[in-house]
Length: 360
Image 1: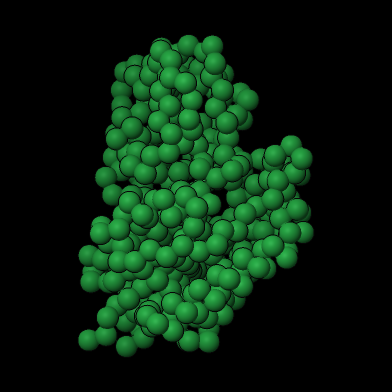
Image 2 (image 1 turned 90 degrees about the vertical axis):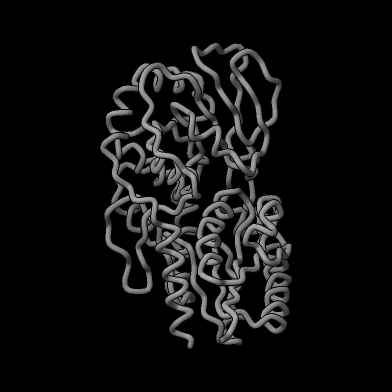
């Protein structure tokens, strides 16, 4: 019997891609697959702690980075203009993947926000993507009164992301929070993909703990709660700082579920993985989308539409924490109405295994 060897190409800019890939990897390993991972940056840190826990081999790739404008905000235009730097990274990663495929002959390659594809095409290795750009595109045109600031990133990045997966991938696993249909047969709709041991903990009574968990990318929001006092403990994940009474900074944590599960509310950036876990935990949410980022704006609007939280900014974080505490019962009532199955990772692994079976 041919070995079920699977290569994951995972974007390592933040931590969200890595956590959802690992949730799927765990299920694949349980079904006898051998999984190697290629990633960079934060992804390398995350998966280095998972070797021996389902990860057979970890390989470092070169990092793509979004460009910033003069104020430090995401600039889609400057990212596109840095084409020569992006091309050099892309060529190096293509060579790395080509060499890996020639040596290891994987049965399938799973990509999550990585765009190498020529080595798979020439070797006729199937590509399955974890990507919900079809939801982003349909939601963008559906939502009214969008800020103009997200239009450049949408048309220069998100729309091309959708077209890439529509054309290149054999299958696209599209996790989502809404009830919209998938875009054609290539896109397979699944529930949100979350880690094992994500608890549905519907807390009652006064808030005892709140968690601020912000993106590990260079565009993650800052935390400045200097001089603020809250009637509960605040744990900050992903940032360093000086601890004070009621405020603890934990830095980057690979295993943060013990803090998330006991939190009365979460303050998060609007990456889809963080939003998915917050929704599946049924936690009231304050969502701070990265500025000028279309997908993060859409994810934040979905939280508002579910009624379980609201969009805010880093500058208004302290006031937003006070607001969510005042309205906590209102948001808890909406959370109790959610009925999300935590089966996204299992269904995603099933799609990957079905593509493997088709190769036999």
